[in-house]
Structures are given as C-alpha cells and as structure tokens.
Amino acid sequence: MEAAAQEKIISVINEKFEGEIIEATMLTDFFTIIVKKEQIVDIISHLYHHPDTKFQFLTTLCGIHFPEQNQIVVMYQLHNMVTNQRLRLKIFLPADNAVTKTLTTVFAAANWMERETYDFYGVIFEGHPNLKRILNVDEMIIFPMRKEYPLEDQTREDKNDLMFGR
Amino acid sequence: MEATADKIIVGEKPEGIEGTGFFATRLDKVVGLARKNSIWPLPFATSCCGIEFMATMGAHYDLARFGSERLSFSPRQADLLMVMGTIAKKMGPVLRQVYEQMAEPRWVLSVGACASSGGIFDTYSVLQGIDRIIPVDVYVPGCPPRPEQIIDGVMKIQYLVETESLRRRDSAEYKAMLNKYGIE
Image (cartoon, rainbow over all chains, first blue to last red; front, side, top):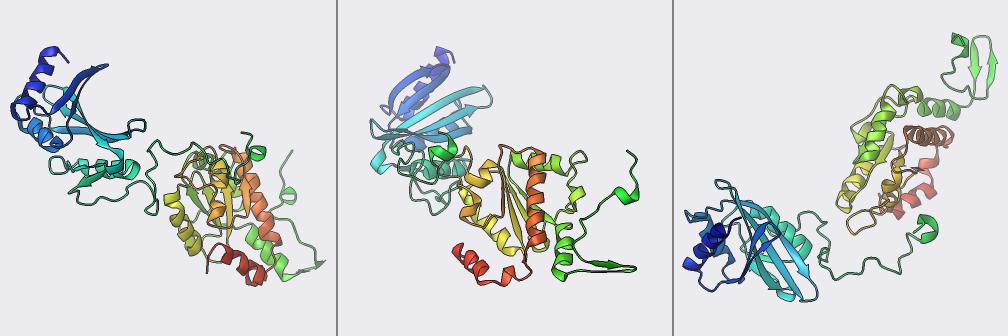
C-alpha cells in the first residue's frame, strides 16, 4: 500500500478518534495499525461507513498470546473490495482480563470468529449473541492456544518411548 | 490353471459326519460359518484410512471375496464397525452412539494408527485411541495401512466371528467388559 493511502486511513481514523492510534506500521506488505482497545468497534464501524475507506469485508479475526507481556492481542483484518486495500487492526488486552466488545454489531461474520477466539484464547466478547465453544468439546476447561502449557505432560504413561519410539 | 467348480472353495467345511444326501455337524459351526461369510461392515471413515478402505472395496482388492461387499450405513443392521481415521474428542460421543445403536453380536475393527492410538495426533483435541470409549476386537496398524492389511484385519475378525461361542454375549465376563466402558 502506498504512503498516501496509509495517510488517508490514518487521517480518517483521526477525524473522529484523535489519539486512539498507538502505532501504525507496514508489517512486510501489510499495513497494520495498533489502536487503543476501548473504541475498537466504533473505529471499525467508522472505517466501514466512511466514503474514503469503506472497509466493508471482515477477512478474519483472531487472538494472539504474548506470554512474556501477559497480553492477548485481538487482530482484525479488513478488506475494501472496491479498491482492493487491506488493513490490519490490533488491540492489546491483559491476559488475566481479556474482555472487549463484540464486532457482531458491525459484521455478522464476526460471530463464529469470535467464538473461535473465545474457544482458543478465552477472550470474552461482550454483547456476543452466543459466546460458547465452537471447535473444542464443551467440557474443556482450558483455552488451549494460550502459550502457558508445557508441550507434553512428562508423567503420562499411555504413550511411552518403548512403544512409540520417541 | 483352469478354474473348475470343484477347485473353488467358498467356505471351509466344518468337521462333521457326511453321507449320501446328508451332512451332520454342530449347530454353532454352521452359524459361525454363515456369520463369518456374511459380515455387514459399517464404514466409519474420517480420514486417509477411509481412502485405503475405498481401495479395499474396489475391484482390485475386492472385499466381496470375503462376503463383506454389502456395506451397512445404518448401525442397526451392521455386524462390524470399521473405524478408519482420526477421532477427535468432539466426535467421541458420536462414535459411541453409533456403537450403542448396533445390535449384538457386534465387532469393532480399528483401522490405522489414529483410530488405534491417536497416531501422530498426540494433542489435546484428539482421542488417544477409540478403545477409550468402545471395546475393540482387532487393531490394524499402519499410517495408513495398505488394503492388504485391512483385509488381514477383516480376516482376523472373520476368525473371531467363526469361533465365537454362541453364548459369549450372554456371559457375565462380556457384560462386565461392556460395563467397564459404561455401556448398558
């Protein structure tokens, strides 16, 4: 994405949300903006409706865990189908209290993506119509994609090296 | 070699007394012989082992030679549950329900490393062997096993079917075994 297009997106956000942008960078070939977590849904809604941006397609949404910083990132990837521009937005949440507002009010497609993010990272999306596990069994008590578990339980006996050659 | 009718053996004749126009043998041998050569398998194929099973059912390997060409897609009419592929923990209750719907006598063939032990999927979401939720009669190793191995597994099942006592399913040991899995 050219610098002019990047400036345009930043100015559209700053029109209404001055001071919300923490950092805007080009990650390899993907324009990425880190914003404050409080108004993320309003910012995405603004980018959706603004005639200069029109990011009207939600490509994906997911969580990322940073165990050293004890933070969970929720990453939103938006697409403008008319100009074929892509934008990535990130918010940082504390891992102990990963709560944010649901994006289903803007994109219905966020429904299952947020359920997946809840399922694997334990992010609570306030206002989500049906926030329950989607891929894992309902009885699961952990959030398995968080990087806080040992790779293997060293005391397990059901698969030993003698039988499985590991 | 020229194939003639007297060289083709459809099924091994059990021990018995033979004379002109009659053949006398034990009833359980006849039942075993009949059951062995008319097993209706229910294919529960979830991944690549299922593809090997398709080859097994094809003309080249042809499971029909063993009397098992008639697949039953309803568990209620099936004799043999063939579990072929990775069973995720979320699918565990489904597999168990399929097994519970099968009528006695029923047998289970676990095809491939995943169904038998979880295989390479040594992870939180995959069942580490279907024998954690249902009893298994024969395990076929391999990742995936070749059709010859699957046929070998079916022939092992055939041996169990042929030699099983008619009263085995009523025995206290069998009931205790099912109870161990929490069935009935």
